[in-house]
Length: 142
Image (cartoon, rainbow, N blue to C red; front, side, top):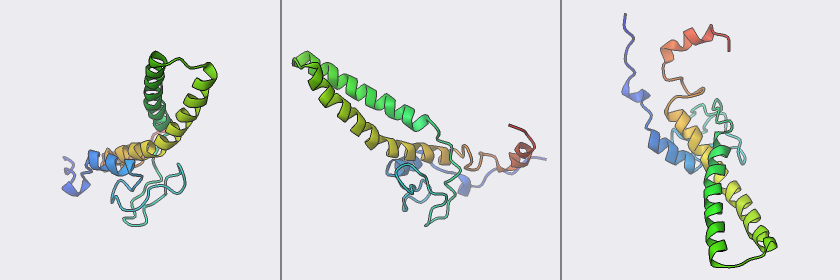
């Protein structure tokens, strides 16, 4: 016996979910904030009541943040070093605070985007992609 195909209401568009996450909004409705605090994701959305607390973003948002900030800062350091001559103390006074500020500014939206991606693809607690296989997975030990 074949399993029924998921209905169109199960489809979750990826790019809108990522964009909503970048705006720190619920990936489902895009109305309410997805965060309780700076990085804590709400358990459920207060508007659409979508479960958000099951995400497992783990270290992926900091990894992406480090990757982006590293490329920006290293590029800027090379440009400044090539065009001007600064002391080591001046470099430290500029680049260390700028790195910290950029990292803190990007971490939250990037985490929202990762949660939005996971929600859209039904990854890590957001439905698993195949609701019919849920019973089979419950018997496995991880």
